[in-house]
Length: 270
Image 1: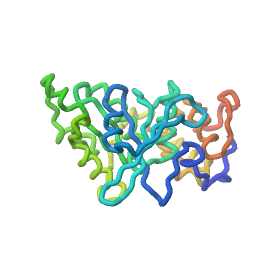
Image 2: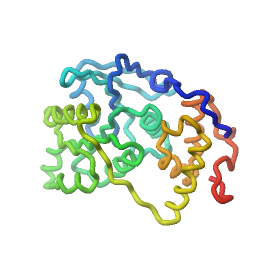
Image 3: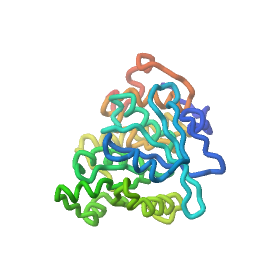
Image 4: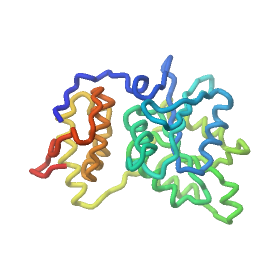
């Protein structure tokens, strides 16, 4: 792909996502499956300090808002509801690109406590992309009504990320959610999520691809999670290369313009 570092310093957050972070306000992404009460969490955190528009170049609604905690102002960005970050839909691609390229200071993943197993798929994918993750266990009242008991302490130990139980429609748990967000953004909490280990074959391929990526994408290699990028390439996801060209090099290529075999390891093309 012939990547150079010419566009390092490119203001991805502002130019590509319409997020104006004046005075270095921390930017918080709000992710989650549909029907988890994510919008209620967004409204509960921001109140009336919000506005909506569209994501740049898309017909998908973008909602941004502000909240203040401990005298610090935060920008909250409500990502489209998605079941994964695998770029199978416009919504998934927006959520993936924002977390990957805008690099929010913290990503809150809102889950439905009464249907946690299905929701954890997205949580694990976000954990793979960024360390700064909070699991918001919303709809705890629904879980209780269904006699679902979640061992939060054990789950937190397994995932190694903060877990905050909430009932957003009753404003329960949101103060603690703000406090945890504040602590992560100000490095008062260091989060090191559990990393998924794949088969020996996949891990071996990742170990070979990462240094190749680092050598080929120059200065932006510290702006992208290279392990995550390697996994996407192994899966054959060419849209991630298209996204790198777009956000870092301002080069809006179609998939067909991305040549095969640009990333190789031991003669195998990805």
